[in-house]
Length: 286
Image (cartoon, rainbow, N blue to C red; front, side, top):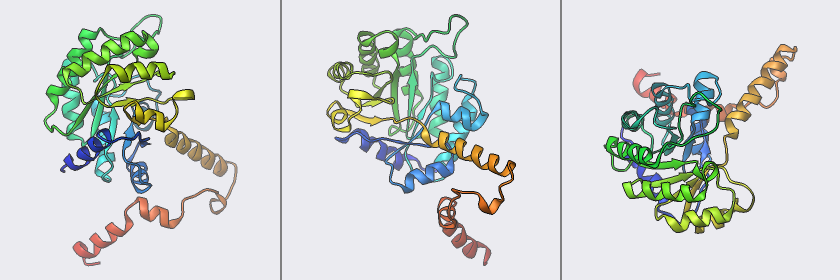
């Protein structure tokens, strides 16, 4: 499949003047719903991937092949440009290069590589970061692994919350110098922090979930934030809905009395029923 057009649409978001919220997706149907509702981009996180594929918490026990396979399933289901969380690139800089190659093949529009020391090492459990030099090596490897120049590679750091704003700025500048297309920051809590970041770098900014004084789209737009995550409520809502439905059935509720089921029209929409009906007639003579 040709993935370039959706990557170009993602780049158009980064080149725009406003901040958008991505739709958090985790499988083909959730991606189709997000696309139908008009989300400019989708977000497939490592945490939702771990939940979807393994039913496990976000402890980096998911493998690259499992993550890339689910990303491909999402991408082939529609045309939503997909941003994915590639964590630490599943290893060292050589693994990062391989990660980019696999995710590009899977059709993602953009991916993030972070400088967190992962998987969590033996010890006190505190979040640690790799050195700036190692982070730079990972970013260089990521860029080297890219074949389609329209694929967006974003350098990601949680330094704001871990080591402070000065270190976050130093890392951002180093990654920008290497040539990443965007910078992704988590842990931004104040306008002063974001102002410092915006003043220090030139590339578009992506933020993890924000709150309080930072949670204002107009303000974010003026600070070159083009994408701001809102969390991953859709998969949480899906888990709650499945639990409630199975609980009701287990408790004796009759299937026809189950509440909050999708309409027939919605099911036809998310399963592309009209397309499959047309293809059936065209190819099977039905």
